[in-house]
Length: 490
Image (cartoon, rainbow, N blue to C red; front, side):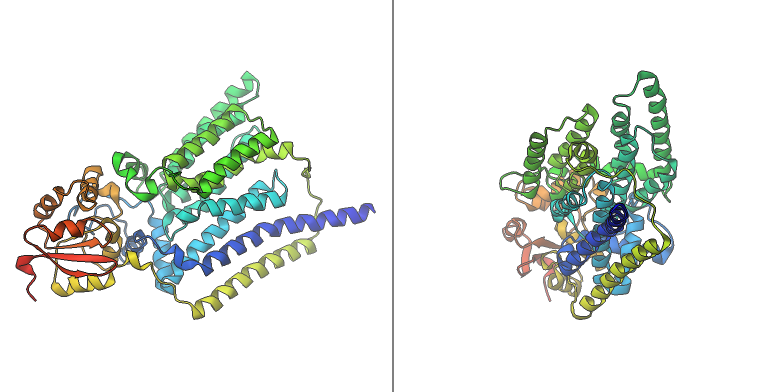
């Protein structure tokens, strides 16, 4: 009977190793099937374009060369490594490449989260948390660099949380992780900012003499992490480039992903907040003040900017895992019995089979499905007409900037808001959205615009219809073109 129990436990141990892979494979296949929904943001065009430029020139950009309003202005790409990865995948498989890359990143994120939670929670509960996290992040799962950085973020915070849970310090061998994050996406500043709160989680409950020594070790680790985050081609400029976006003031309220959470209608995020409160009340959780501070910080970020909901979704479970595990009626085993080499080979074979099945499914699906970008982000016909008319200085809608860069056309403005600055982009929004229509003619004259390309569902085209010297020459469900009357002759 004892031998039977040990064998059963060994089987469960091997199964637990494969569960994260199964969760990841399921997430990957799901997002592969709905891959067109990942192609909804025109920023993907300029991200790929910059990646292609880096590959062609074997260099990194330090100034802007895609706009005619900021030519030569200082600008660094804090997502250069992600852009190169997207460019390579696009070259190999067209739009299927970025879709596969993004789906794989989501899969890896879910698998890492399940693996980390399994240290404290039962496997079904870990899988449930991972599924809920993916659902919460759905609105921001796009073929863009932040998705490639997501698994790195989860692994980094999971490593910090594990060190804090055991009242120790993180291993310096993990520092290359923050370097990788800094090359993938500017969101690495969150990873640096969380070192402080994590250290207080580790310090809580220790004797004062031990607290001082532990705090010093965490401080040294934080300094080392700051230095490691500068191990990029841009060096310390990476930090400046990553924080510039946070200095855009009012502009952050009008860019959809940076806008505050809206509870006018019920959302998954609202349900998650209510569920979090209900979980605390039902379980009678008693958290240490540092853990409470971390949950409040992540909640505040998600309330302030909807793009931070994914950080809330994937990181809050890591903060709650140990307290939840301690209140669970089911006990996690402290140690796993040793496994034979044959058992390890079987586990490895199972993992390879999962990966092989996923790739085979990818090949079959790609053979009969062509991924396409969302039409309302790609004014193809309107841009073709502008090129035919020889328009040189086009006043474009903010959301069309990425597509125009992808077409090799100099833009008035695009998604790199930190390049243009708060006032400039706010003037564009106010002029085209009808909040200050008197700004529109001033901008057109000041920048010597000869054609406009505005969204069909915005007030801008209607304002131009009544503006002397301008004539509407094209309109469809996506975009409207106006040209100066002295340039509208065939």
